[in-house]
Amino acid sequence: MHYQHYGWLVSPYSAKTRSYLRYKQIPFDDIEIGAVGLFTKVKRAVGRPVMPTIRRPDGRWMQDSSEIIDALEREHLQPSITPTGACQRVASLLLELHADEWLPIVAMYTRWTIAENRRFAVNEFARSGLPRVPRFLGRRLIAPVAKKMASYLPILGVDTQTSPGIARFSEQLIADLDRHLGSYPYLLGSRPCIGDFALYGPLWAHCYRDPGSRYLFDDATNLTAWFERLARPPAEVGEFLPDDEVPETLDPVFATLFAEQWPYIQKLVAAITGYCRSHPDAQRVPRALGNCEFEIGGARGSRRLITFSQWMAQRPLDVYASSSVAQRAHIDSWLARIGAPGALDLAIEYPLERHQFKLRLQQP
Ligand SMILES: N[C@@H](CCC(=O)N[C@@H](CS)C(=O)NCC(=O)O)C(=O)O
Image (cartoon, rainbow, N blue to C red; front, side, top):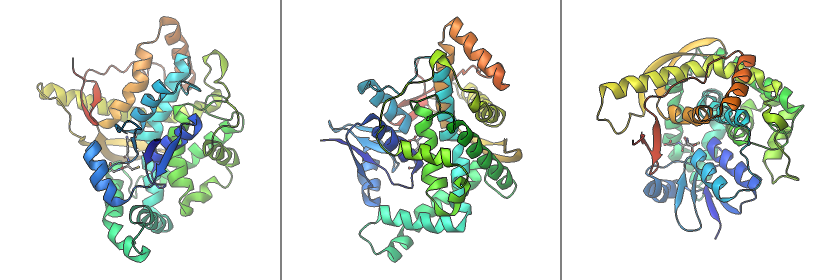
């Protein structure tokens, strides 16, 4: 039996794991699990109706795209998607953090504020979730799920005040990535890293695949060629750039990440620290810890502090913290070049870990 990959085509995190599995040429059945299966089988196995999930040939389940990819990387060594250089590893995990925890602002904005996309998505939810129900009825039955998704807009800080900034941020990101991909096949050379699969998720599954925002890619032919590359097994296996180089063409992407997403991460880490200090016996932290001010594309707004993002931020921070002196010097000079010196000196007093599909405070 193959790995069974459960996810819908509209789901960005499922696009991330699907493109990874394809690249690694790991045989898998790609299953658009119905709503009933999601709320029974998946919920029983991993605690909530979430996608993607993977059921392994031995019957065990995996959930969370990062954990899935990490686990499969340990078992399917070649071609590795993890660069050997510490700076490239930090860069790839920062791009994953950006894609998974910041791009939902863009992806949810394009899907649920553009009427054409909203209609398309509801129809897709019905097609994937209720395949045997006549579509007109399916759309009505699935409407609560769509409504729940759209209800994330204020949580993510998408409103009339931030919308112009979100539009600016997306256009800039698409232009920056397109320019970079005009020089390199993937983010870090001729081999994809986890950042490639993660960014592909929201950019392809929401912004590009939804018809009402596809125009954003009209002038981004290098980016759409990268979509194509990530949509099929590789024709040949390339290499990461030599000398642990992170190409300068990505500097604008990292500069924006450190200027806008990083302050949010810093506030989140401070909020978790504050919570844990005042709850010394806590084993877990709440899913959210109130709201904070944030900035995107230069626009200011307010959004929820989602604790899961700290776990994602720990991934690049851990690599940085465990680097050798020489590796650190190289990463520091890269950060200085981007205009974010010292950004990764963020100490996490209360690290989080995942245990049985749930987040908890790291056990001593
Ligand atoms: N961090 C998770 C996020 C997964 C996620 O949020 N999936 C969405 C669909 S793309 C979902 O199932 N949401 C429903 C929920 O979270 O209850 C991952 O990387 O797998």
